[in-house]
Length: 337
Image 1: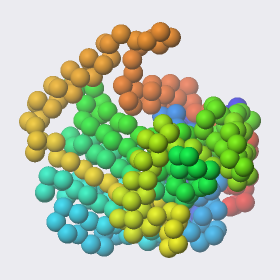
Image 2: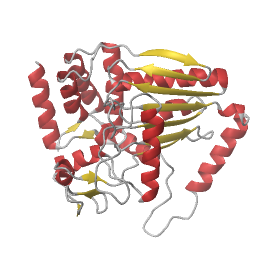
Image 3: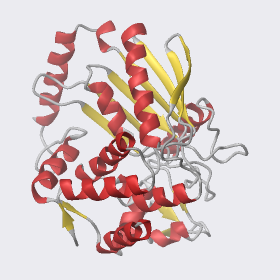
């Protein structure tokens, strides 16, 4: 399996994006999103997406040089029109707008539409938390998940993310996961490695349980995590991210194939003094980290800690890319020469 340094992978990604007609400033945003996902161990949202992104451009679904705009504001709310540019660029503008609104009003709620695949949404709530605020993000996507008790694709993987500022010696706490039992991109990674997935994540086209990633791509469906609980959360992401953004509900006519997104920034200092927030978050993190681990676990990790551990290790040792994925990426770049 090839292993690339962060610098090598960034250079490769920027080269592909710029060959697709992406302005350098936008290429930097998208590159940071993709390589950043690989760096923290979420290869499902990393550079393998360049293959799909290139097809988006060729199919006219992404306009690489399109500039997103804030097309309306009303009090503490606003809407970003991605104008079918890169999703990461539109979502970044939405995040910055939510932060600005929260500074003024105490809370900022921004919806984003007309952009395809915004990437790992934990990145956006982490940006909010780094300002000392709490952040929430949800987004819908094309249907691939069956409802609890069903076998037909009705929802997207519909991730949601939360983040809060950390304590004096702790980074922000970031929670980010799909409402399906596994993100679709992780099926791509497993398929590229020739691996099966855990039981209880997929049904095939006949509604029968399967552990083969190809069962999904041959007409099957993902299942929600936690049974009816993940089902309920995925449904609400369709409403908040899809319906309220204007993208639409993914399984209904009129859905525009965008990542309908809602971003919330909450100025924590409107509710609690900054020093109290820092001290309490620090004490809470210590309490969790120092709690007794269960059998088979070395210690209890905080949300976001596995990503920080992966980032430290991959920054030092490089980022592994599956052989088949790297071959596809090299072939992709060759076609763009």
